[in-house]
Image (cartoon, rainbow, N blue to C red; front, top):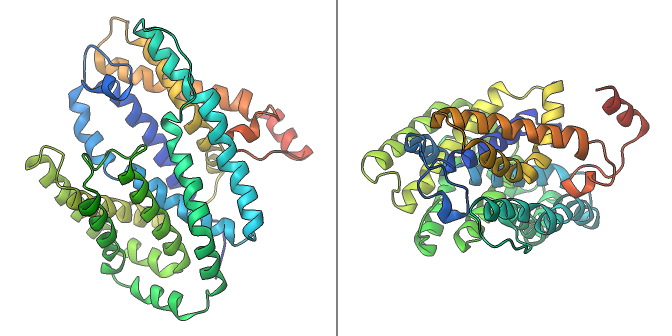
Length: 361
């Protein structure tokens, strides 16, 4: 089986993290922002909620799928010991550092903005995702290594055949539906630090690995039937919007989520599987930017919300501010200072050629 670089997956991960930033910024302009620890605008933009609700049902499961796919490529080059060492450096170290030094920053900004008593305590905050991923690696790697050793066996051949029709990928939604029915989450989209989020993420991570493992057939199927998946997703979202006021039963949201994801995979495979300088840069930047973005976002909210401007203009400016600050911190600090790089999931040591390229840029 091939292990060539899948540029579409890299692009989709970059796009997903970009959408994550915009989603978090939009929360500032929702009436319930303070209930989940966000600074809240006194002039809400509730019209943002409809696109947010469409995105929210699949944005986090999508990242878990992509993470499972990434593990497949990592495992093709490493034994179990090498894999755990690499994932500890790339995931666990930034997670622990983030708990101690990054996530508390935006909470302190929140306290200062609302004149609350200032206090510091380590917490995962938005980095809960990394803790889940590392746990999945520990739990599932033995099974995945076994499957890789048996790539020429009947299971992979059967899986590839199963994915050769549009219902193949959709069938795995049965597991997500079962999770929603058995766990009964209060909100399907409440992923962070919940049993629902953990199990749903585990399923997406597992099947993300299996989709890559099954070979090109999965990708050919989702590419061919992408409009079917998007059409089903739009239909389910319309029902959720008109009948259930954006919060339909969990089993319907589980199916809708996968329909969006398979449609996005199909479009990505057809149009984004190509390299480029922009992708090379952004795929490296995405992970550190994810780690630091809440600090930039909260800082932007503190500076911009008090201004006498229309709410939508504030949203645009905070968005631009967040991306620009993240770029500056990444480009001129994280990327260039050797001891910071591993704390944000980047390669520990750069060779002389790589350092020269950074200095030139």
